[in-house]
Amino acid sequence: MAHSLPKLHNAMWPGLVGKEEGTENPPISLDRMLELTAQANVNGTRFDGIDYFLFLPHTDPDASDDELRQIADKIASHGFAVGSLVAPVWPGTVGDSAMGDEESRKKFLTAVEKACRIARIFNEHGVRKYGVIRIDSAEFGVEKWREDAQANTKKIAATFREAAKIAEDNGERLAAEGEICWAGMHSWRDMLNLLEEVGMPQSLGFQADLAHTYLYLMGYNAPEHALLKEGDSEEAFWDAYKKMTDALRPWTIDFHVAQNDGTVHGTGSHDKTGKHCPADDPNGKLDIVKCAGYWLEGAADRGIEHICWDGCMFPNSMLETESTWNTILGKMIEVRDAHGWDS
Image (tube, rainbow, N blue to C red; front, side, top):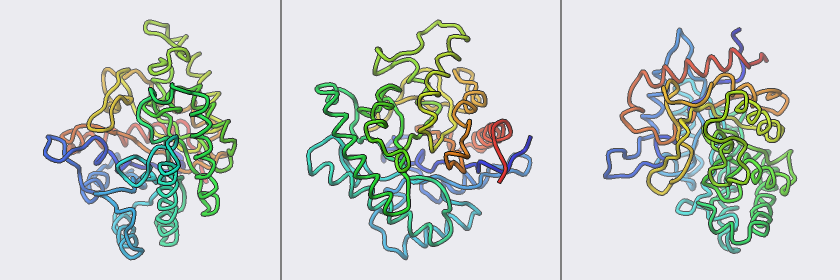
């Protein structure tokens, strides 16, 4: 059955994350990512909008109001809305580790403030009417976190609470990205512990990605929290998937459709992360449509109005291929037809 919601978005950051100048996979400009997204067409259905990483070379987090309005005009000229925004919280952008020293945590909060400012300008422009601001702990890897896991989780939570208050004051919600590379967020159990420690569900929730959360099941960076092991039956998989999604779904306010082949992948500074695969990858471990349903149950009640495809770290040759985007869009339509709703 065709539904009008959730709206279907494509992420712009696959043109940036893991890309390096002077390699076979240099950054892809915002203009080109918009063009590639706009070209996708499945029986007359197109992407409704984009989700957007607020950092160079796509966007200067300190761009003037007029420069940001020009970007909004550019996005709108393709008929796109802007949905969720990614705050530039990483070291090397504006921010720094949420479990770092006072100066690092101050930088993290500054990144959230800058994201809220850009969100306000996009909202006032009219190009953005829904979506959240995505954050993570900005602490790559879990080794330092493990030195004092309980204290470090409390430190991240304290930073997140301050960030959530900033978002509240700006009429925004934050979504913490569940991914195995982020300290304190690297397993389903640790992610849940962190969300509960923050304790501000009205302002800070969870951003679920099908590719990343698959590796939560396997306990890649937290074997003690594994729900599944290689060779387990299909029945065991769905039992494990239900346990994980039942725990995290009530917190889920942002959702990425993706595929994973069960391996870990990374390039550049963004290493050891869940591998995103093409929607039709023959090695894909996920029934995308069925898995999406576990996360999207009750999504409208949690304020979700769009879903986004994440093809982070696809090689440029794949991103530049028209059929890649038509296949992705077709799978997104299947997800909406199976689990969507109407306004």
